[in-house]
Length: 281
Image 1 (tube, helix red, strand yellow):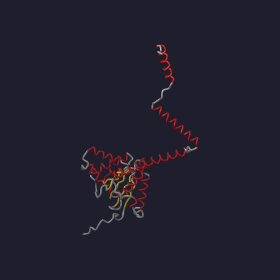
Image 2: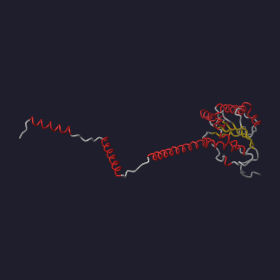
Image 3: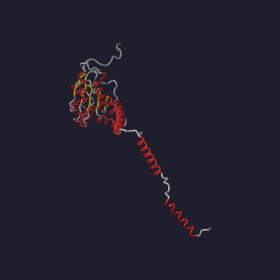
Image 4: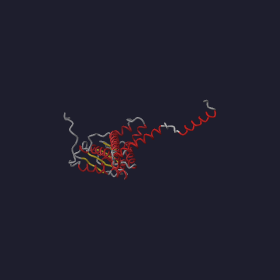
């Protein structure tokens, strides 16, 4: 039987009403995620109801995770410290044999000086707050002056992460006065490093010279005054006793040394260097 237009319209309206009542499935990713969460919660509820859900000590887990995180932080800190130590040692350019372990503490000429060196190291941060400190190490060649200063440097680098420059005075003069460093900006950087490094060690100052050239003496005096103003410490090594050093460097420079109120360490006795051969003709 053929439907009238009115009946066909009524049928279409009824279909439309049924479609509006039937919810369409949500195919979005969020809906899928919600279903997964609901499924997981349902599974946990079933496990809990069956008594097979593991029991966790959340306080213990928190401590375990914190300990692991702290261990990782300590490991990173140790690696960073090791890298900085290696960089500082390369900058200082020290003889690796210049360490306290290679010095004879039972040697009557060395024992007291080794103790004094350790006091200087332990109080290094204090001296930085008090305008810096100075040690004047003097004595004959081969008596252990450079070794003692180098041992101090090694300890300050490894234990206290201090920056050190260890230079023979002749090397400083060559770099700044005789063109070993040709570029002016590089010379300026080197001069600033001499002024600002935590510990400057100058070896063989005025070695075997009755008097330094005026330009060298003036530069050394200004360098020491600059370090004093910056509260930076210095070690001076020479084969002159204080009176002979005064004559060699002049009043201006010697007064700059005295401003630090230096500790004098006199190393005497026979050469402590190992025998390197027989040079008798």
